[in-house]
Image (cartoon, rainbow, N blue to C red; front, side, top):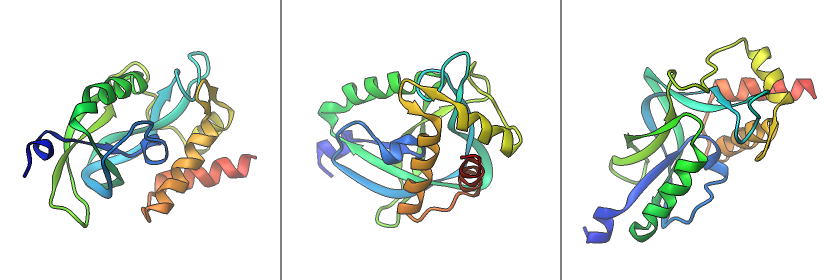
Length: 179
């Protein structure tokens, strides 16, 4: 293994990073992390909503026997600091970095950074009836665009990598029924 490979960082995307990473990368792999569940429980007051009317975006919750599919991106060691700075700003609304084991069909397990918004952050909204979450997403708009776009692009991105996520797809159906 070369020095560059040892220093390379992998970043795991399970939300908007699937369809809009926003940074350059050396390689990407579809795969999963275990013990985590993707949920639309995080409030977005800076991207897909505003403080007075937050949108909903995904975060990860620990859950035994659960698998979360997404995409891991290998970043160039020389660009790592600027990419992490960009992501720290992009994920500033309650997210923090965690190191998780990532698995794809084409590699042995690798460590990847992932941004998780825990239940103790000020923007955490938590669970709600599916129709209430759909209505909130349907109405929310922020500096990065509509909350509907976020949900629909995530669902499309998951289908492109052939990942199933009942929570995302059920919410997508509810939002589409509101149009």
